[in-house]
Length: 496
Image 1 (cartoon, one colour):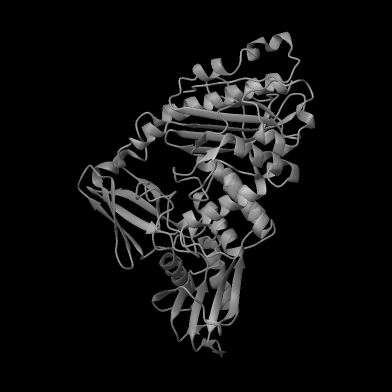
Image 2: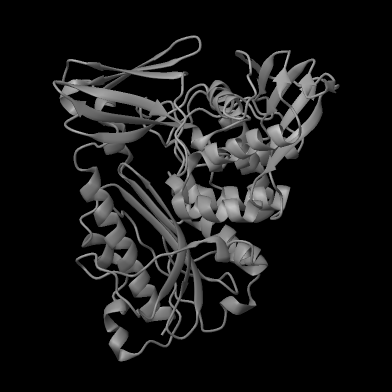
């Protein structure tokens, strides 16, 4: 798991005199800050015992540094590039914040391309997406009500949905199973995180199934997604992309009694248009067949609009709930705002990587998307800690991170634990990461990154087992125990 651990001991106070760049260039593989009290004798033995006792296959890389000075305190393979999983979202948050600003709001508009006379639009109505990753059915319902309140009652032209604010992407990570809701399509308009709700209920010898765009208040049925129950055991789901419909089948032997799950949407603009049609009709406005457009006429004028929450609030939720679509859309929006027109997630992520190299001095990291879902992304622990140290000084990131509780060996939360952790987690099958800040009992704040991965086992997963492969859950649990053990160690040595 860990092949080489080399050591250097710095003289007390030496690190404080080093600049960040000098420390980065000549960072010790492992250094300890004296003096240590007798009760810390176990920590003196080094991290080898913690690592070897974890029972974790694959590779481990970590780095921990003083958050104020940037001095590296302890590292293992800090330059080893491993998949960061969702830890990458911390970098995406910084990219979006610096480019768009914390108060930025995404705007979804309803436009009229033609004159409105006596409540009649003699032209086309356009639902124009503005890259809002949080647009939901309730927001569309509010737009439909506002449209009615504006006096509009009839549309004589076409109904169009504009999704050209961002590039079209079929799936965040095409290597994921087709049916997983965390890898939907991406475009300039999204609804309900581009997921459709599939529900089944037992009815005699069969099932009643429905596909809807539900919110907490309403459940509009959709026409762009259909589900058929087929008498089979496997595969559980199949998907066929028809011209205007996401066509699914589900294995009858997998359904059991009643249940539900969210499935990905592969036609975001048609999905949003389908739902908006229904909501407009409930307000007395009948719209025609949805037409998807990638450009807007210069003559179109805004009738009503919906603004998202401020970007900072969106990013806080993104980091808390690890929503992949949010990460991709805000990352793409930031790249577009920087004057680029990326055709793919990889192209946008490359722009973010270049930005991070210039902004934070990243050397060994390269991302293929903004969410960390693609396992071809690579990040080093040293790079991540460098980002965290600088972001901590500006105050942009720490308050957005999720509080991570310390736990006992059985996984129970330890209330009142003296170590406080605010970090971003990252989990893929046989990949686990944690990066953020820990505050010791004495108030010392450390920036840390822990990356673990067994890329060989991950690569060997058969396609049909990629959602829940054998052994992945236990592996990830061992990785999380290792993360906690390392944090406990650092708290004992540097923060007490």
